[in-house]
Length: 257
Image (cartoon, rainbow, N blue to C red; front, side, top):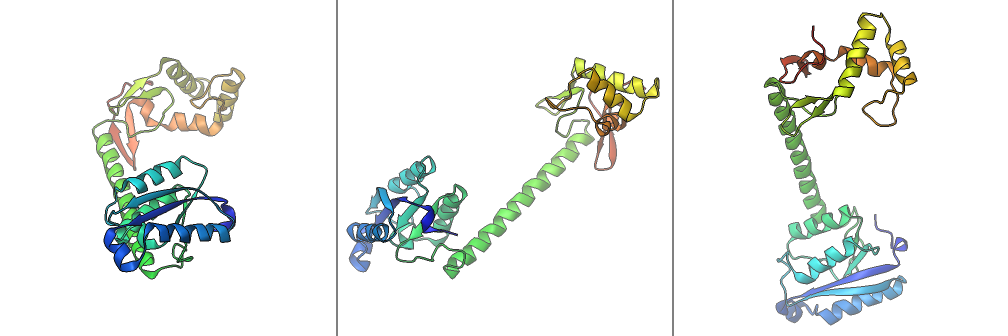
């Protein structure tokens, strides 16, 4: 929620087509006066004013608006003032898209003639559009997740690695796994300690830490759970496990059984 006390500086934005000025009297001078009055009443310094004279609110590529958005995203001032919500865009959907982009970058937008318009409980039409767009965002996220999940399943079924780091290997861009020689030696040693020396997970982890053997994550220590995860992972014997299924991998095994 916007709090005017959080802002001491602001940018102004003015837009007016010739027909709008004639019919509604919302000329650039009138808009600027309204913004200046608001700044005076709320002790806000107006840093700069961007203008789009004679341009339609249906055009998203207005030079003044684009310059403003680019400028405000890279500047410390995070407040934009407009005289009326219609100055941002005439099309409600376009206006909400612009507003959502500003909000993602922590930028507040205020219509000086409609103080509560951009609040959560403001204009009912904006609330409806926002709900529709939020639903589309959620649908898009779910669709992307579904595609990624099915893409991984397909890759694994063909013997390819489904992603992430794995000790002993280096993942390639095409979904392959290449053995990391130094790490692979540690993997073989862990299996040897378990099978031939009958050491438990805690003993193996302690041994690796005492010898300052590095883990995959820099600065991290070996833990019994980490050792157990390596010993239980089928990948070292040439298989791949994904979502409860076992597949033959295309990678070279580190442990031969």
